[in-house]
Length: 95
Image 1 (tube, helix red, strand yellow):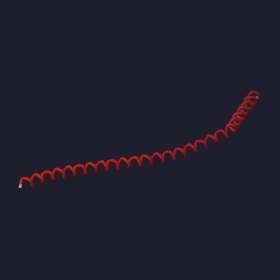
Image 2 (tube, helix red, strand yellow):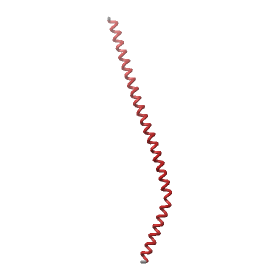
Image 3 (cartoon, one colour):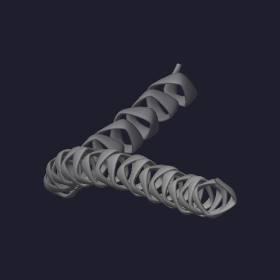
Image 4 (tube, helix red, strand yellow):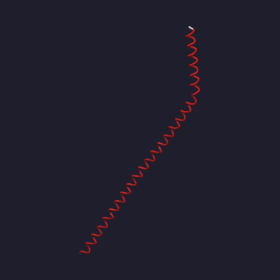
């Protein structure tokens, strides 16, 4: 019976010690949770900013492609006009 009583007292002491240690670490845990929440908010802001910039880059690339296509179309039209003009001048001289 005394062995059981001694084992019980040892267990209670161990349990109390673990409970006190756990309680002493609680502020550190709460602080870590707050820091983690702050990091998630920062991540959301950075993610939104990154997505915004990617969209702007995409629009910029699209505009660049459209400008290049417009220049190419203008150049083609100019070449056609010049060749038509040369053909027309040639036919005028022939007549």
